[in-house]
Length: 190
Image 1 (cartoon, rainbow, N blue to C red):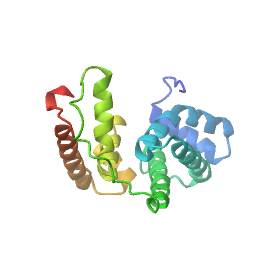
Image 2 (image 1 turned 180 degrees about the vertical axis):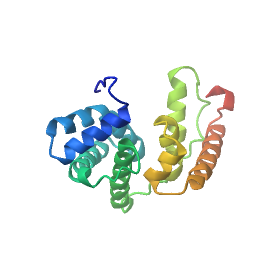
Image 3 (image 1 turned 135 degrees about the vertical axis):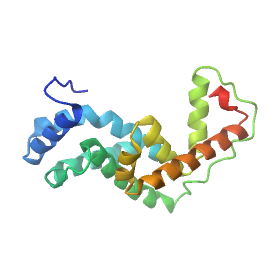
Image 4 (image 1 turned 30 degrees about the vertical axis):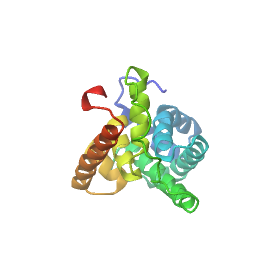
């Protein structure tokens, strides 16, 4: 990841890099990539749940960042703009896949033995429960909790009102609690 000096905040640095990218500066593009690629990849991977697909969409995302840098209007943080690009490309991929499989058709998670909730098993349980959420619920929780975006930033990425973000977070958390409950996991265990 890139190291920034006290010359400015990460947001200021991202904006400066994007301006240089719009002028064709490949070194600035490399620096922006180094500073952001892990965040973008993990978002895409959690959304798409396929490594190869996430990698392909990530390449497309950075291609669009390179091409679209000169069109950035500055209405949001650079990373929020990039996550919006990544999301749109991921949704396009999911639409293509939808013909072959149902995205929300997950196995019943309530069967089987009671899960062990110690240490890394907690992460496994949470991952399993998250997989049982609809894509909208999974995505909203990912952006808010894993990427620590504000509701305003999520609103910009998803192109929905802030109040809709709040509502989706509420219902996503309720759905997650329900799945965990069916798995035999109490609130205190996760």
